[in-house]
Amino acid sequence: MEMFLPIVMFIIGIIVIIKGGDIFVDSAMWIAEITGIPKIIIGATIVSLATTLPEFFIASMATIMGSPEIAVGNAIGAIICNTGLVLAISMIAMPVEVEKKKFMPRAFMMVVSMVLLLLFSTDGNINRIEGVVLLGLFVYYIRKNIKGAKKSLQIPDETAMTIDEISVRRRVKKREFAKHIVVFIIGAILIGCGARLLVVNAQIIARYYGVTEGVISLTIMALGTSLPELTTVLTSIYKKESGVAVGNVIGANILNITMTIAASSILARGGLVLNSRNIH
Image (tube, rainbow, N blue to C red; front, side):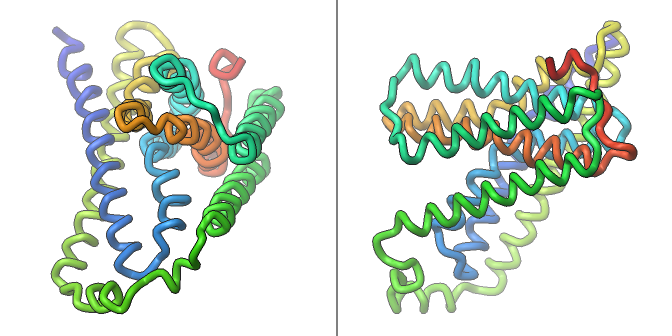
């Protein structure tokens, strides 16, 4: 019974993160659309980042709280869950023929980011310079996505808007805009609070059962934060769009390294100290 409350709080943390991420992304997309940002750019940036937010917030929070094992374990565990569970379910339920021109560059980027992670981790520490290199790869990936998305449009997004759409945008009430700003902030706060709940209670559970924080984050926590990707895949299968699932998993794997681990290594004093069991 001693561990009942920490376990419950751990589960609540996962639920809060997922719900917060959902609210955050919905509001961000509404605000972006109303302010005139092309939908294709929203899709290539906000949507691709959405399912990686839980891992990012957990890793950042864990690093700040002095638990690098949780930061690394959660990111690596999420990659394993995404590939071995989420992608596997997609391929078994609905095998898909991927478009080589779109698939290969992203697959190559995923391999490059994984190789860099392995190289940087050989000395047991990912320093800030290495973190900046990974972050640079993240910026390159997002820019590449935006450029590719723009090229795929048959009509430039600026000219695609009708006069009616412009006038509707201008008539949006300030109160509604303010409401979405508030919801956006609430979503971000929920993700942050959920991340803190997860990290704090993972530390308590790990100490009680005599296992490392890395093991908890690599397994239970990683599975919990991979639920958004799993939900996306199941929805894609239901809608017979398994190609979306493949792209989502590859993108999430890239971002877990180039954004999540990169940010943690930059935030950590003296770099991100690694436990080799989390990486190799």
